[in-house]
Amino acid sequence: TLWGFSTLDTTDARAVAEQHRTIAAAVQRHDAGAAAAAMRDHLVWAAQADLHGLGEPAAGLRFAPAAAE
Image (tube, rainbow, N blue to C red):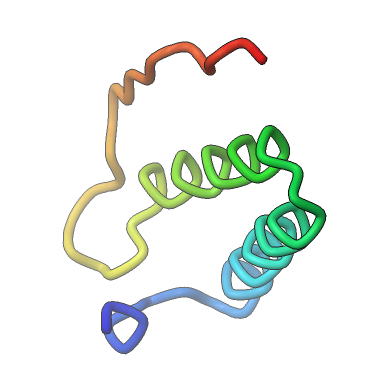
């Protein structure tokens, strides 16, 4: 639903599409570690972007360390 409100330009839309392809490819390979890393990268990117023009990008993000495999 939020894609309809997105303010992504062409460059950002391509970046998001590539992020999604990377996630899907890892899932298809049954590579949980790569899928988790790709999803984390995507979520960090999304949290730092003002994807929907709703205000300022997220600042001061704090994430727990990635789980060791």
